[in-house]
Image (cartoon, rainbow, N blue to C red; front, side, top):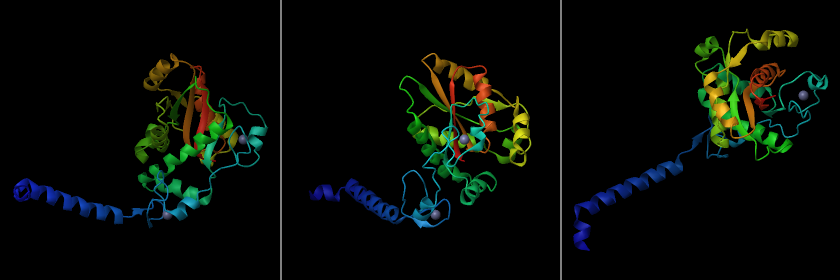
Length: 261
Ligand SMILES: [Zn+2]
Ligand SMILES: [Zn+2]
């Protein structure tokens, strides 16, 4: 035994073990930082890097009132029965001032780590779809996203909808394919009236051949349902035009999946 204890290998094993223990101590004491408020916390939710207070402040949509667009209150737009190419939309949260702040941090103020908060939150919207009607086993599900124009992409450096779709893809293990591209640059949608927005969007999207060829391969295995990811559902005109573009050429079911409504 003494021979073993004095052996040089034993010394290095002991050193490695004591280093490991000190790392364990450091890790157990290390707190996580809340991605929203910056407070140290112990990790209240395994999916969302947020402190308890920020988690509790999320205005989740739990009661869907409009079965079509997923709104939490009655909905004049859908009641008018406007033509839609979407089976339905579901959104995860109400677009409150707090949520506007989160999206602004992410999109305009360079806090790209917010994708790890906003992206996984889409899982709630996905579950709301399942609550309405579980997707039949024989239907294959996949995820795509609303594309940005080249101009906007180079301005921002990333497409938030694409990043959010990637986060949701990791959690659901569904394939994420780029199916759409923008053919023309439209001005900021949020500043336009509803009818103006709908007119402006006609023909703005086109199919992205790379994603479409992979979709065709999926379709050979049976029917496909596509979830289109976007950050905010306002009038639904962007998602509807995306769905129209896809369904004008490919026979699939299309759902909207947004972070906020
Ligand atoms: Zn916080
Ligand atoms: Zn509605």
